[in-house]
Image: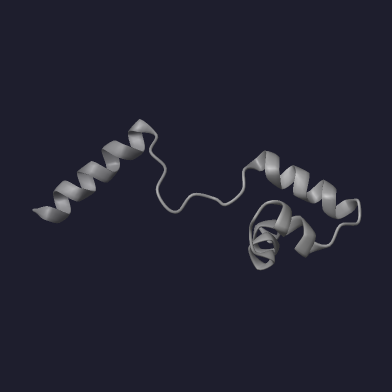
Length: 64
């Protein structure tokens, strides 16, 4: 019964447009700026520091 109710709740939430999962660290606009900064010659660590994220997070976001 619990599984049925939680499944129904999830389905209703998705229909309302609720997003599931962890929020992204950067918005699309921030990603565009980060890519531009990298093209202009800044290091990955400098760009990551600009957005207050770890450089491995920036690598992961750029790969996806």
